[in-house]
Length: 273
Image (tube, rainbow, N blue to C red):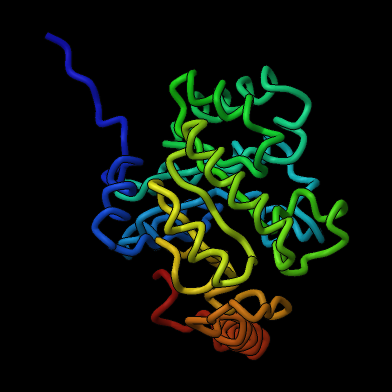
């Protein structure tokens, strides 16, 4: 009789759906490296997202577009080693699924095989319907993403609030239901009016995870470096900073530089005999 290791995190896709049914809010944060993922998982987060926002906060790019599939896999491999309890979801980066559904399935399979993630995330609605269905049919859980979809920043012409007009709001509602019917286990709603997010959430059986979508969704997601105050240049209305680590880290480095240059570090206790 053979035994098999645990293949799912303590939080599963079905657990998230059950949380919605019970009215229990879902917490989600990004992580891109082992050390931060270890802290995040230990703190009790429900979902860890290896987001394509790594392109911004880790590589210094102005958009999410430059990050490659190989790069997102590298980050996810590091995060997977730390995440034991949370559900681990990985973004399919720009260029890895837009051409056709075959490419989308291949990219999703690579992520699952090479990172041992629990799920993948795609941006878009009706345009990715076939890709979502094919990926789900391959046995891979999919999280959707509607509203402001950063991979389409050049099409949108910026990062303004989406779906403020009636036609776009109606399309978003239809896309959310389409993603649910195509097999998505959850959907991110980014930077849309709070009232629209509430209506979409009420219509869905699957959880909605908001970022700039108000309080009446099933969960919230933020970029870790933003909420920790490491990134001081990004200050959207929806961001709450839970720490000011930029200043803390900068002061620590300044103190280290001072001690090294002044000959105070290392002292006798910090030296080997």
